[in-house]
Length: 428
Image: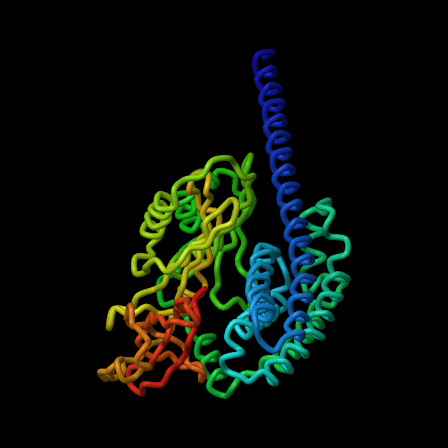
């Protein structure tokens, strides 16, 4: 009898100790996630102020290096802010509106001077300047107590959920929608194209949460041992997905996997940067092995950028009809310089997949198409969105031209059917 009582007491004590340890670990994980949220809030706030300054700088110049640098800053900061808030449990409507505005602002800063004259470009940036300043002020009010890192998960949900929060996220969403409509109004063809994208659905069979977790563990064995929780995306998401949050001793982050097909929509992990640097080609091989293992087998390398700790790769989908790159269907991957480990992935544009149509390809004599001192160095086929938001098959030409004793390099995109020049980009 005493032995039975002893075993029962021992079992209760052991279970209590296990429960305490598990609860402590979960608390530590949630604390780490709260710190990450606070960091991302702080980063977004800081870069939003920098974006405000960059937009105002464009109002100083009509052309030249000053205008070019300001527009490049807008492009970079718009992208950085989107990455900073990507893992935050923001109100879905607000997040969608904000991402759309930032995306259109970044795109206009990069291409606007090619599609409008200097006067119209200045008018758009003047309106954007006022709206960015207002947005920055409202964002500061909304997130005033969030940068401390001391909030619980419940408190984060209460502050960022559009239905529960005391701050009017719905009202801010409406304001951003007005900013978008006033600063970057859609043409009729762009609106139609956007509606078609929104109506598209992945036709792959649905996967369960368990299958999504299994894929996560297969692709990311180093960080998938400590899953905090798995939740469904909120209503209104373009593609329903599973949002999986995780943390271990030195990493914290999330992965979004589509419910249809089990495709990786996005992945982000934060961890301390280590020492040492792998060769670029070695990191690229690791990245391309990961893409193949993840099922992204129809993409090709496009470009790479780098900072002190990571390489940022871009891969582009190749369609089977003409073996043409689809410039709108890209995957961005961030990999650590230290060991080639995948730190981030965004495949939203790839998964959306543009609907492409075949079109005639006329032969063009580039010798008469260009001036006689222009040299064509490379030619390939691409699908690119024209000014009406329609995907067109185009010749992508890398050309060079002597300019005041220096060689200028340009990418020229020419419609294969109409010979229209869709875009011309000067290369740095």
